[in-house]
Amino acid sequence: MSRLKVMTPRIAVFAVCISIMPCALSGQSLHGSARSLTIQNRVARERGFTYLRTSRQVREFVEKGYLVPVTGNDDYSLKGVSFPYARPATRTFVERIAAQYHAACGERMVITSLTRPEARQPRNASNRSVHPTGMAIDIRRSRSRLCQSWLEDMLLSLEGSGVIEATQERHPAHYHVAVFPERYTTYVASLDKQGRTLSRLVDDVRRDDLHYTVKVGDSLWTIAQAHGVSVDTLKVANRLRTSRIYVGQVLMIPVTQNR
Image 1 (tube, rainbow, N blue to C red):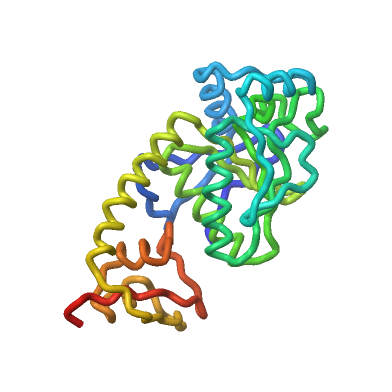
Image 2: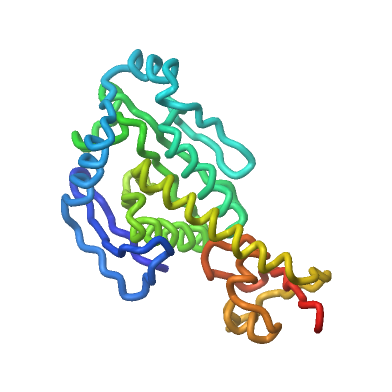
């Protein structure tokens, strides 16, 4: 399982990998420092976000449309969230990653915190937390090793692309994620453009009812080679955001016209 940095109160870490696509995570080393919180606060200041102090201010920002409702759906639920609101880009992040998480490991994601005014911060919260700005979320750590591994890989990949800062916290066990609005919106737009391009590749093949069950030792590359398709085509056909697959997973294999 990939290592994700652990943040005790006031301590976090930062990883750098500039790329619009997920970067390679093997060998990535994450060391503890306060730099992550510094980065989160700098982005919040650059964006001009207000650090909300009271519940009343949260309600005012909801009324003005600066914060939007985050209500849960088939892919994620809220647990113990006092203020189910977030910045629009943060809600987009929640909905996208929850759908991918649900598809990848078979369970709904659980969100345990969103916007938190300074007057309602827990005792162990850092006084530099960006939860009062509405740009951060907390995701409960699953008991499933598969789900843990998938989520940690995804968070590290997104952090490597410079669109979020993520930390793993222990008490209670969860992942803290700060979403950088402009960067994340640009990132999503680029993925959507790429997805449309790859979808055209899939449209050029005839989709017979051919399915393959992943076996021990399989990878997307070996499966793609065996069936005469590309890894990218497999990922698009099965709505995979990463190359992670697991034993027993059923993949749809697009079959070309001349096979």
